[in-house]
Image 1 (cartoon, rainbow, N blue to C red):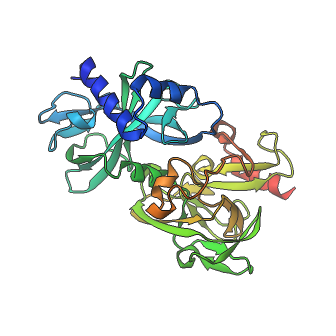
Image 2 (cartoon, rainbow, N blue to C red; image 1 turned 120 degrees about the vertical axis):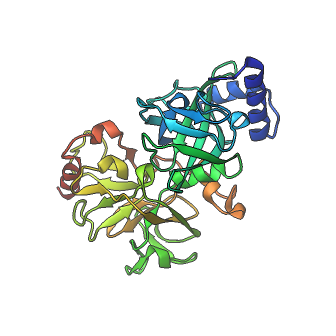
Image 3 (tube, rainbow, N blue to C red; image 1 turned 90 degrees about the horizontal axis):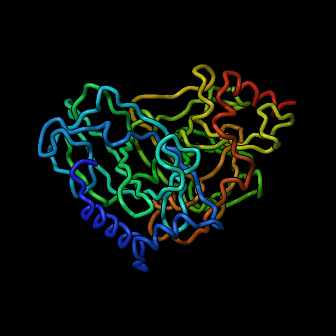
Length: 367
């Protein structure tokens, strides 16, 4: 990490710990707490990220340096991806209390290492379009910076220069929460307890929705986020009939669908499974709906449920240490965290990395 002396890194880590931990534990105690949580259920969020050394300042105070932590950033510096820059999967396990660690399934980082969300930054392309990104920091067992990661919320382009407009810790957790939340796109029809269907944008708190697992349930809250529909935030389009859905279904990429297998076509070993929308993209019946902006709607109940969207089963918003930050203040801390596996086995990407995965799931649900 350029220009990061050991004392400065230690100071940075101490600041992070005191900000995130109201008990003011020491750096060592906090790292130990993160690495030895064994009874809590972690929630995995997979993100597309770059190592910071792939995004370097070409002009300005930090010319030649890799992207750094908040205290090192200088506004108006101009950055660009290096020619060999390539994003990779950063899988984070979110723990109760707001800590993160690198998950075993991650392509970046060292499994089990603590990760801190340092700040949110805004970059401007030459044409004036702005790009929001997050800066995350992995630390080693001594509390020293091991790696810095850049998580762009829309794709970065090679050969483009990006001017640093703003950098702040304020709002960083909310931005991460919005990127990780399960969402339905405007126009999606949700099945009510009466059997009638309503567009998601017309659904109001207090209305009763049909759930697979608990019958009629009242909506606690609905949220709306408008984001650029590009890259890791581009919605997934499941074409009508692909998974027995009545009409085209547009979902956020992290949204999970419930499938009941009458025959185990995928090799999971369970009849009840959850599949992530982005893992189903095959370029034909399931595609990325890339471009422009999209309205993402979240549906929250008192508990995590499986509901029906365009006639097929999909999850409601799962509250966990990451997504909780997308909720209004009065709701934060008022709901228990859900369990990702409470409605079935979550299918790993490797089992869906086959050209006939969608066909196999449809066939399995019909047999």
